[in-house]
Length: 348
Image 1 (cartoon, rainbow, N blue to C red):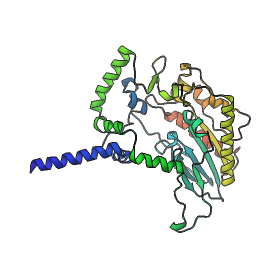
Image 2: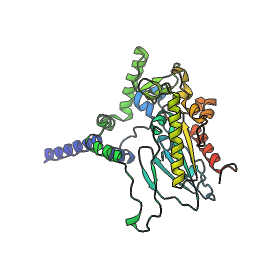
Image 3: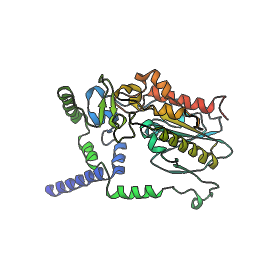
Image 4: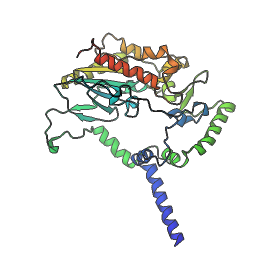
């Protein structure tokens, strides 16, 4: 009887581990349930490197405008990336009456209240900027005159490319080994031994995990795609031609024209600098793509610029153990967003 029970327990455990490794959604759901330690609790760069000097407990930034006034008849919509995901930015950070967000990897149907002011922000980190604006942005689809009943309500908008990608992911999900490893060994007890190994390799062999790069003074850590040029257009040091700058500007302008025609009153562009662009531009020949785009005479879209702010106080803008901004960097961006949209000089 005992052996039979143990076999069933073993079978359930194997099925559970298989589901954790094979289904990303199940893995994320288990992480949110706090049954297992959060992968990113010490930062995404620490998660890759396990270097103890870059181990820093992640903290949640306080809302910028708790108990805010919603007198402004303005709705803010953001097409953004992980810098503006819910755990970092939410409705309580803006003066807007309503706030909506979608990730660059997703699409979403929305309804615009034409009696109010509707503002769209195109937010992207520098390393994916060229990818996002290689073509027009198309992540929000505006639905006009939706029916009041559920049958006529907006239906989820999914492109053909996304359908194909979703189909492939069902049968061939990436990262299975990584998810399994983190499920089994993502506890502080095991991290201690990983830290010893990482520190030993760096000290005696001058070698770190291949997905991270250290600054020359070894005080900062960066994601490799931000640094290594070669085939990576994500790098701050990959060449960018004048022709590409013109194409990017053209796509940004066309995105604005399309969304204004669809009902938005204003469209803003905001490019968040790569961490390496601010903390270690001496690791290569910086391409200055942010400045080139933002100052291009052909650009018709107003810019919410934080590059110039970040370079003035670089050490405070990013988390030590992560690719993302610190609360100080985030607050600078949020204050500039609110000022750009709600200042007396803005078009209300």
